[in-house]
Length: 410
Image (cartoon, rainbow, N blue to C red; front, top):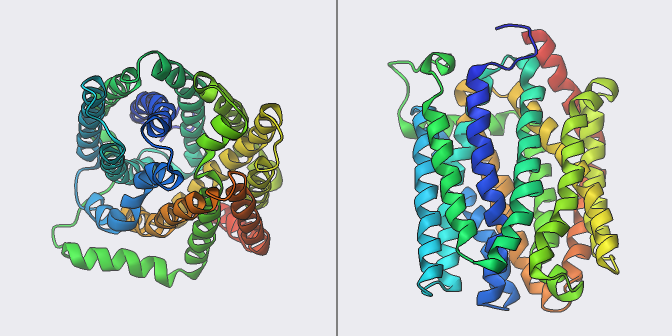
């Protein structure tokens, strides 16, 4: 593959598909919680409206990861995009016909979350087949930047305004975004993603599923990283479970401005994604990883102490900056250490642990929010900071080891 700065036509089309979908996701990321609080004020149901998106990772991720290692990943991404478009259209129709309720919204969220298990697993499995290892950090940074700019800069603030003007519009536009994504996926030439050859005598589905679980279980360093990430994510979801109520009720943020408040965190995330590869080269991937996740937890805690909206957005800027750096470099670690032929299964297994705990955290956050809407931030923030600090030296070592693996394989 060329050493030029270009990441290639296959990557660019995959990135454009991702970007189109993320713009639509941003619209729905603002509209869905606003729709939820318009349907109920029950903090547990509101927390579940976010948790239902993550719950499929607990139920299906390992099986879906195995499927992704056995089937055409490009066709998987196409089918998922069409399915999500249909679900978004269904929600829009239910809003227009006044037949939507909180339970139908929970169901729609669960279906979209299930589709996203396929989407994320197939996408992450494709990246190492398209990019050489020395370009992985740049590719992951590009995805993180698009995620931030299109979802948080544009989608979220526009979505909150559109929801106030006409509640069904963000969901309709979300559907269009996924149709465009499906078209871009079709345009990726098969020759660019044909690196992974499927053996004619490959094991059966069950055997491959077990193989993926065993790989993760036997690699104690990756397993420990997964457990650490799962526990920190658990804390984050306690903290953020009822954020929409905290902002609209405690800090008195108007619904139309809800997305604008989240936008500041997006600015921080953009800078974090841009600087992560440079910081990794200068200070070491492991050091930047450990600092990023530690500061993310600190900022989560500080959000609960925010006396007003201005303080909140300043803290969320720092949180966005830190978590984006973590996201970029963490995926680079996994892409470096996990063989691509088992990546889907291992990715599904680790996400079962990481994202499977998140709905439980969100449920706990919803329960404690009944006492005080600041309490989830206090509990989740302290828990996440503690796990990050205990694991600091380990994250530094493993992050730096993944860079050494790149050098060996180059």
